[in-house]
Amino acid sequence: MPDMVPENIYSSQVPGKGKGLFTSETIEPGTCLSVYAAQLNHSCNPNCVFIFSGRSLSVRSIESIPAGGELTISYIDTTMSYRERQKTLKANYYFDCSCHYCSASLSCGEHDIPEPLGAKMTAQKISQLEIEGRRVSSLAEEAPLEKRSDLLKQAAALFQPHEDTWPLWRYPRSLVNYYQELISIDLGHWLSALGYALKAYLYIEPMQYRLSWHPVRIVRTFVLLKIIVEAGYQSNEGPDSHLYQGALQQFGSNWPLIIAALAGEVDAAVPQGFGMESSFAAEFRSFRENVSQHPKPGKEAWQKERVKLMDLATELVG
Image 1 (spheres, rainbow, N blue to C red):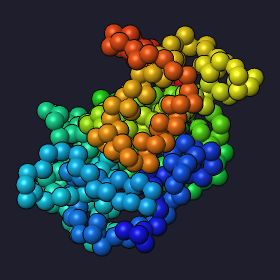
Image 2 (cartoon, rainbow, N blue to C red):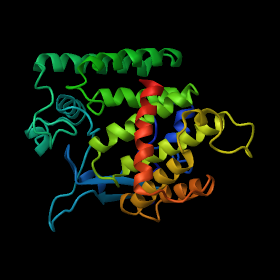
Image 3 (cartoon, rainbow, N blue to C red):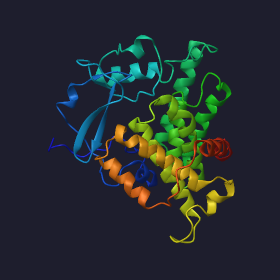
């Protein structure tokens, strides 16, 4: 597709420092028009995703597809609730979705939960809470940078009394966490950014993207790695200082081990999620060459550090 304008599907919509972490350094965001890709139908539980690598677009399957089976992608953010998905598709694409998820009125992450989320709340209360959370989040998107953080804290506070019904990975609470991470980066609050990124890694992404090699999950883990490195550098005297001194040292975690474990997860997932010849794979290889190398940790050592990271996320952002 030689006439394609380069686009990075994972680019951040928030200007400033955050954009450099969430967008490939080698690809400028843009627009893609493909008559072939446009023929793929929508599903809220798609079996394929688009991957952009430079000026090339590929369609990669994220599950086994029988011969002759239909290839589907999602036109929208699949982490949205059933009601929000229906509303968005109707407004932007002019159809009512009848995929498996929508036929069962399921929201992201609910497909294998025995008791439907919200059983302890009325449908009206769930709808009101979801609408209010999304409204405050939307206000934060448009507000001046210095006011966004307070608005997002208000949105997050709406869901905290309903932890059993509204876990962190449920939309729009997960979206609020993502925005809080972006705003923290733009404000240069790296420890807060680390806290929100850890919450996403530990509690949100495993529920929203069950495959360890799902492209979105790979990118988000890479972002977490970048935030750890950035937070480590902020308090150092210069480029020759030890990478993990300063702000991160106070927490007592084994940061070289954590970096090695997270990088190992990305390494293992890239071949299936992106392909070794992709621009993302090249960018990740370059990143690894510029950070301290540490042997891949054993499973037990990594599990101990994960428990510490859970406590650290709570300590940093509540």
